[in-house]
Length: 365
Image 1 (cartoon, helix red, strand yellow):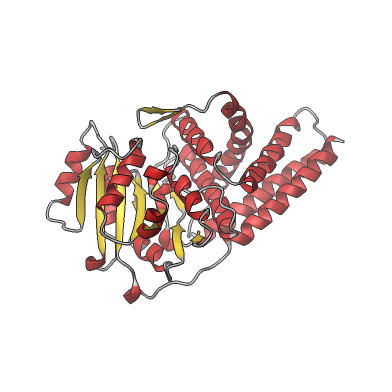
Image 2: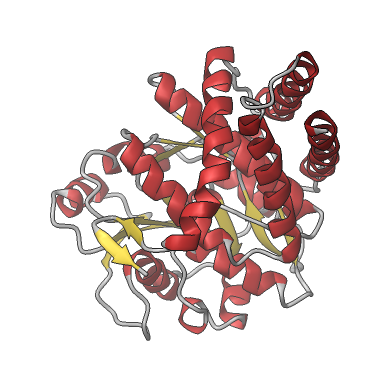
C-alpha cells in the first residue's frame, strides 16, 4: 500500500515538474542595443566590507551606454568599512552614486527602506537590483533591460547561481538553480510563487503605481511582495527568462546556521504566494516526506520509486545548468538531493512554531 501511495504522489510531483519546465522554457522578444532604455542599478549594502568591492568592480565593467545608466549604492547604516570602500572606489566615476539610508519612509526598515530610498533618488525608468555579495556578468544589465520591449512589461527577473568554492557552496548553487527554475516556470505561466531581489528589475512607473514599498505590508522578502502587488494589478507582464547573459553569481552561506536563517526568511516570505504556489509546495512536501518514510517501509519496489524521484530532480535542474553555461557536478547534486529532502519537510513544520527571522544582525517578526 505504501508503494502505491508513494507512486501516486510521485506521479503528481512529476506532472507539476513538467508544468514548471514548460513555463521556464518560454522565450521572450528583446530590444536591439540601440533601443535600450535608461536604467538605474541599485545595491543596498549593510556591513559588506568582505563583499562590496567585488560587487562594484563587476558593476563597473557593465557593457551599457554611459549616458543611459546610473549605479546607486546605498550604505544601509553599516558599522564596518563598507562606506569607506565604496567612497574610495567610486571617486571620479560619475555613473556611481552613494547615498545613506537615513530618510524615514513610513514604517519601512532594513533593506526595504534602503531600496525605497534609492528608488526615490533614481532618475531612470527601469530599476535593476542586485546584492552586495553578488557579481554580475558584463552583459547583465544590457540583457535584462533588453526584455522591456513595451510598456506592458513591468518586471523582468534573472537567474542566480553561487560560487562553488567547496561542496557546501556547490550544493547551495544547485539549490538556487532549482528554486529559481521553479520561480521562472510559475511566473511565466502567470502563477508566481517566488523571486529573488539579487537579480530583479521593474519599471519605476509601475512601482509608483502600487505606491511603492511604503504602501505594501512589510515583508522580509520585499522583492516578492512587490512582484505580487504588480501581479494583482492584472494589466502588466511579469517575465522570467532563463538567459545566461543575465546571470548573477552570489557568495554562498558559510555555515549551516547562516543557511538556516536564509531559508527561513525565504520561507516566511513565500507564505504570501498564491494558492497555486501553496499547492506546489505541498506536493514537494509530500513527495519528500515519502522519501523519508521509505526508510521504515523499505522494499525492492521502493528502490525504483526512490530512484525515479532522484532522476526527475536531476533532469529538472540539468537542462537549466546547460542553458546557463554551467556544469552540474554529480556530487553537488547528490548533496543537494539529501539536503532538499530534509529541508522541504522540516521547514513547514518549523514555521508552525516560529516565524521570527534574523537577518543582517536584525530581528524581524
